Image 1 (spheres, rainbow, N blue to C red):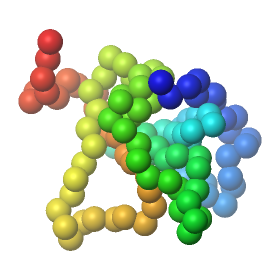
Image 2 (image 1 turned 135 degrees about the horizontal axis):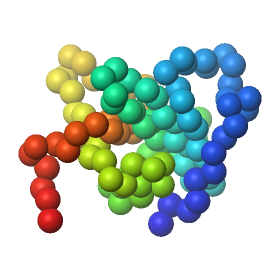
Image 3 (image 1 turned 180 degrees about the vertical axis):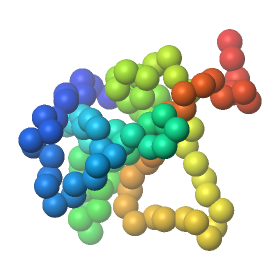
Amino acid sequence: MIGTLKPVPKESWPVKLHDPKRSRVWVNAYFLVQEFQEEDGVIRLSINTTSTGAQGRWKDGISWDALQDIKNACGYEDRDAVEIYPSANDVVNVANMRHLWIVKDPIPFAWRR
């Protein structure tokens, strides 16, 4: 279990890191989750731990189960989400952060019960 995610009021968001696509933010003792409104109704959740390692980077190791629980806790339990593994030329790996893209329609190639 990930614990309860608490909404962060907009007035508490860092002004220096303003992003007009950011629409909601949640936090608990383990995770920081930011929601971004992307094009065509796609929602991106950016997820990182709240713990840092020796070099000051967020700690790695967010499990699939944690990502699924976070997606559900943010209100998207009825929607499919994808995590993208881009071509080598498009990799951006500057922080231990995961991204889930929540899509409007069910993904046709997803497994269903």
